[in-house]
Image (cartoon, rainbow, N blue to C red):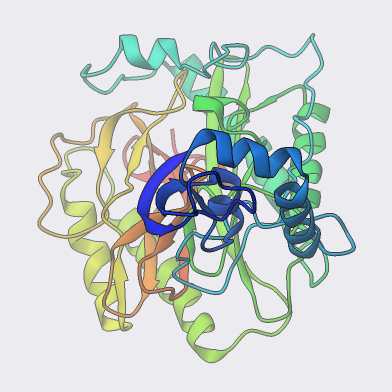
Length: 373
């Protein structure tokens, strides 16, 4: 029971004459039922025993679920845009026992212990053998992303995309890196419309005019690969087309300046002018990152100008650049109560593209066909 403002006790058999009450039914609060207050635990339990109160819960839950049994788990959350989660989530997908996995995969809390041990360490310089492993895992990631993208169309659910990515990953004897990472429940992130990143695949069907980012990460031969892209669903409006174009251009311009000796802080100096010229803004909460045998590690790479990122690119470093660009001037974000889904604070759309880069004489996406060693 939670404490709230005073309303007359709702029990039909209140022994105290239905005085102003402060104890609110927590289930009613979650379901959005207003005015469900009681003066004591005895009145609350008495009403429940009569099954009157429970019947109200059941009616509202049935209304929220509809014929399919799906429901919005956070009906009282003040959503910034029109997107809503569609639960229940499907069960956690299984990874065959023979596939090697990162340390967090079987952790009850999803704790990436190896990452925590190396917090604050300088970016690693990969050996030639490790660089080759990074090429391999990133090319596998590109294959999987292309497979997922081929299924993007109105009517498919993001959970079905998750199943496609999961199956394509384990078919390649790889582990889907997001699965159980800090308890993330799925094998891929799917971010639709105003979702900036870390969208959880669920039962919502994609609609004509949506945009969707598919963020594929996988673990193969002891190394992680990470890339993503944003796709149109059917026919999208001109503003969404502009957003996708500006976001991709900002990443491409950033890649051009990457080479040994370049400063990580200058990446944002290249990205933000492209975004602003297109009438867009750069998200500041999330950054690019180092990646190798760890999913996330140093360096930290902000995508906005005038940042204070530390470090210089050196040959053998591997890192991601993944700008998240919002329509309009607001770069701020909020989070759904699932503790993962980041959305634009004004409800406008956001897009993202990501590549994993290896710095040698120049930097190229590791999933490309360019021989750059």
